[in-house]
Amino acid sequence: MEFDYSRLRGKIREVCDTQDRFSELMGMSKTTVSAKLNNKSEFSQPEIVRAVKILDLRVDEISQYFFTPLVQKTKPEEETSNE
Image 1: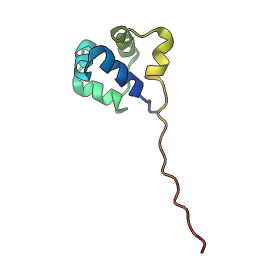
Image 2 (image 1 turned 180 degrees about the horizontal axis):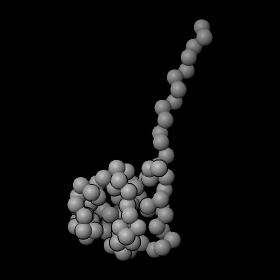
Image 3 (image 1 turned 180 degrees about the vertical axis):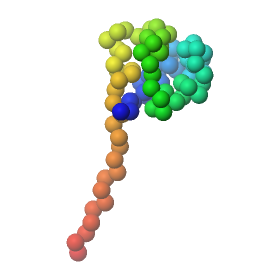
Image 4 (image 1 turned 135 degrees about the vertical axis):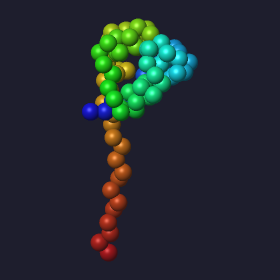
């Protein structure tokens, strides 16, 4: 399952200014954080706990930032004409 990290990205910009700074604070490479935010790898529980502390999130906000399912956009089916 893929997750929508757009809200998390916004919070990262709000608190850390850049994803690079967030990566430093997380103790991860920029590539690793990018992979996680792009659903190429998953956040571990300890990583989520670390991010929650860095971003000063409340416990009741965690699911909004880390567990919102990504809604796949589908193309509308082309209408076929029977003329």
